Length: 445
Ligand code: SF4
Image (tube, rainbow, N blue to C red; front, side):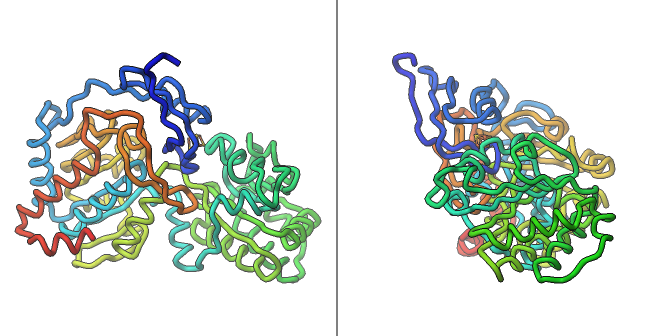
C-alpha cells in the first residue's frame, strides 16, 4: 500500500442485493480511485475498481451542456407542465433519494414505479395476498440446516450468498458450514449453483406452480398420482423424500429468484412458494426470501411502501395512492402511450423495455439521473450526471432481507447526489405550484 493511501473498513458493496458490508477499500492517495476492494467478489471488485470520476458535464438540456441550476429549472418545468408524469427506476440509489422521488410523484399526482415491476413485482403482489414468513440472513447463517434455492443462480448473480449467508457460512448452530446443511436447488437447467447442491431437481419449464402445489399436498399428507411426474419431470419418490427432509429439518429456508417470479404463473408461483413455507411451519420452522438483484431495490420497496402503502406501481392521479400492476407499471403505461413525461433514476428503460414503450419514451420529454450516459439519457430533454451511491454518496440501503445498512463512501464526487438533485427539483415544483411549507413537510415526513 502506498504511504498515504486511505483504507475504509466495513464499506458496503451495492452491486447486488447481498449488500456485503465487510469490504475493505483502499483509496488512491489522490482520492479519486479505489485500488483494492478486499473481501469483494469478482462482481464487487469490478464495481469498485472500475469506478472512475469521468469528465462528464453535470447536466445536459436537449443534448447541450447546461448548468445545474438551468437543468433543475427545466426539469421542474417539464414536470409541472405534464398531465401524467411518471417516475421510474430507483433501485440503484439511496433511500433518501427514493423518498424525494415519491414526494415529487405525490405533489404532481403522477405515477411512481421501480425496477421491482420487472423482477420481483409478482413477489410484492404475493406478499400482499399471502403474507410472508421471513428471517434475516444472519438468522439463516446461524440456524438454517435446510436451504433451498428455487429459480435462481446465486453462484453467478450473488457470488457471496453461499459464503456469507446460507451454504458455507458457519453459524452458532451450523459450526461446520455446508456439512451441517442440506442444500437443494430447483431449476429448469443445471447451472454453476446446481453444482453445490446436495439435491438438484431439474424441472420441466413452466411447471413451478404444479410442483409447488404437489409439495403442498405432500406436506399435508395427501396422496398424489403419477401425473405429477409427467407434468413436472420430478419422480414421486424424489419428491416424497425431499418433502420428508423439509418437514424434519430444524430451520428451513426457501430462497427464490426470477426463474420463479417472471415465468409462467408469476405471482401465483411466488404465492404458492410462500404458502408452502406457511404449511411447513406446522412441522418445523420455515422461512422464504426473494433473492434480490439491484443493490437497493429492497430499499425502494420499503420507501415506496412506507409512503404510499404499496411497494411499486403506485398512481396518484386521483390525489391518493392506488396500486395496480399491469395498469400502473411503467412498461405498461409507456407501452399504451399514456405518460406525457418520464423521469428515470438510475435505470435504462430505453435499452430494455418493449419496442412500443421505447417508441413512446422517444416521443415525450424525459429527465434522467445517472452517474454515466445511458441509452435513455442520450435522447433525454434533461440529463443529470450524479454521484454514485456507496462509492461517493453516503446514505441508507436495504439488504435483500430488509436489513438497513449505512453506506461508507470512499471519496467525494464533483457531481451532486440523486437526493440533492431530486430535492432541488421538488422545491422548485412546490414554488411553481404554490405548495405551502406545512403541506411540503407532511408529504415528505
Ligand atoms: S456478493 Fe454482491 S454485494 Fe457482495 S461483494 Fe459480490 S457483488 Fe458486492
